[in-house]
Image (cartoon, rainbow, N blue to C red; front, side):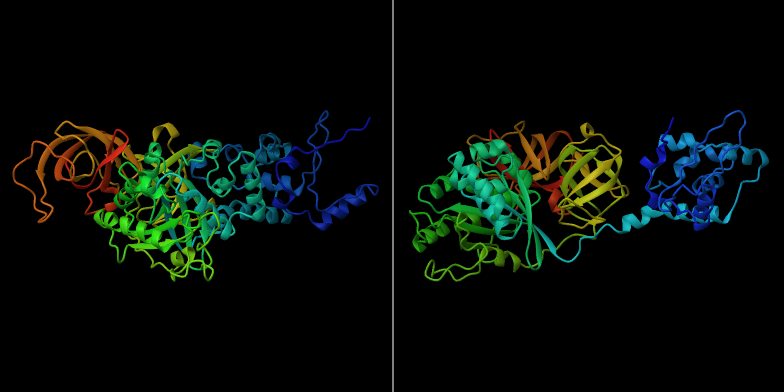
Length: 574
């Protein structure tokens, strides 16, 4: 009867992780059995059989090295304190290995107190030690993102203005989506009688979004130019999903306001109740300082690259954008484009198509923008935007200030829970650190998914952010039919946090001309007025005064599906 023996260790460890047997050992095996051919690159298997006190076969070099490492029972079973402080090995032992380790030779060495040593054993021990110290070299091999500046751009505007179509075409023109994939999308869109929607499917990956042609969640993608790395945030345009748009605007550096030049569509989006006004206001409140206005659908039969229509849209938009805080000379740039054909996105417009526009195409303009000033010297502030579970707790957020380092102990506010950043991913690539301005995914240890929410903030343990329930703020009432008195409730959006808030006290009105606060407390405030009020949230939130940290000190108030007010935090009370 023939038995075939298979080593349980061969399924766990690679031969590369162990020392090669010496040539002398190979020759000795051949002399003992000439018919046996030994592969010197294979790991030796030494069966551990004992029949009636028969001599145990000589242990292999690998077995000897383990005997040297574990000469006594105390070494074989280290204390709990020692196991906590011991460094983690790259290749962990399997249960099969643990069972095979205490051989008779190790018991014999334990009795005599003199472990077996040899030249092969010492060489193997050295190799094992080198393998154990590899985590440091592995961590240092993770690439650190350097060189190109990262900018987050968000596409905003009324529903069906062409935001997702422009974003999808940008991905194709910059090589992020290949032609074969685009042809597949085009074929599927034709089958559903949605021929012009195929470009938007590069960003609208949700089945519901593709069926209805409406973006629901903020789509994310990225592309590179010669000097910059851009992250695209595709905001939903429908009024039902404005809270999702606010979440995306909090992460943006530059706003791309998409306007449809098609007759009737521009008027619908710009009138009261349209999302053009609301999106522009929310972007400004979220901290977007520069706005690129793309007059889209210039190739439409009702427009045909008409300068008259282009100027009409520009003339109506500029006074409104100036009113909400954008400087027309330095903060706004207009350009005509066609998201469906890709005209003026990457390449300049063809001669004769649009002779009245002499500016650069869209991508070239983005690449020529001046670098933004980042707060990399301050303490880490990373508001959590999204969370999910994938082999651990994964959070998504933008580093508003400071630097996030991998394996760094952090504090999760406002719950004051200590966590560790096990992994930091930027564009799904693991990095050693993330600097201010980057939107990253972080794998956390020390907290469960149900114990954190969007709006929580990652901070250094020694420099946590402020938390409060009561604060004083300057509030601008944008649109509200009736008056607002003490006791009025609304929904507060501050950075990534969404919380119910109530007006506790009205402390005064602010004169728009002089900027001075009235000494007399008003009984109510109404539309187009500016007041100072004390607000109280339902729970404790992470918040900062606007003068010390603007990203966590400006907010939006919404009620009944509309944006009614914007404001900034003046002082934390409790």
